Image 1 (cartoon, rainbow, N blue to C red):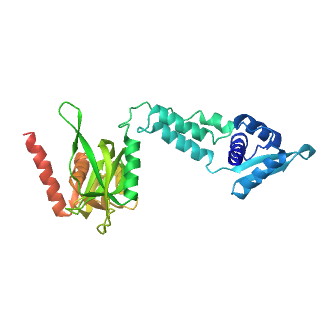
Image 2: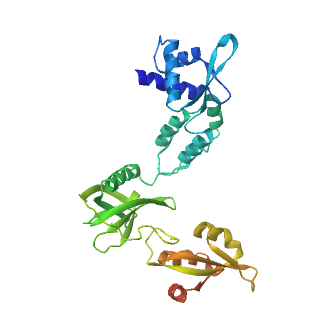
Image 3: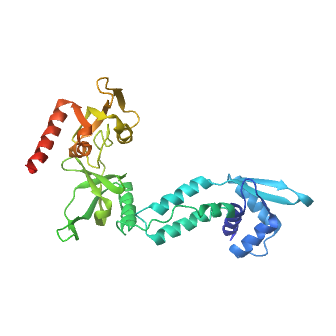
Length: 322
């Protein structure tokens, strides 16, 4: 009962006060009587609850006005209004949650706002009606995080579309250890270490089902479990190289967003419409596909081995259309 009462006091201060507006003790008592069904609570008890909230680190200010009446204000909540609005907007556009899940989460954050802030929050981004990828995604993530925490191997069925556009799930013996969950290009992936090949493998979490933890293992991962350069898709690159690109100047923003703000950029004094860019990049089919989408606006200058492999890939595509 005591904990419920303190929470009700805190909820009241969150909802009806801010850095400029306070409320008297009688309004706090009225709120906890109606919202928490806690009647006949004395003034002294509520004052002690507020003192406990202050001791817990909550910034509550007390102002004395006419007739020496105390007004209480919660100055700084755990989350600012802008932080709450950002979280609510993020929930609204999230494509992995159903509409009912979004509404339930948003209501919890609305309870952390004052009435004035709640009116401002009504201008949030509308809930995205897009269908979720998988109703089991949240459950899959919870299971995977638990398995990683316990240092277990993992087994699961993995789905692929057949020619009839139906998802077909396959189960096979997997001797793999889950390493970490990665969010990339609007999807969740699980990065695993194959115990037999000692190579990393990547799986889409929304295509997994019947996830089960296996034997607990202790394993020293290879020296590089994180990339030591830019990786342009979800799959582990074969190797990393310092790559020089000759790029049309209008693509500079794209290059910085993809390759990072610390990428090396220099002028092409022979062609004012172009620049040179140098970055350490993971070399894989994914890198070549990334470069191909820019067509003739990007040229791989060096190293020659990467340039030659890219040239072969382009010729292979061209041969299909001969």
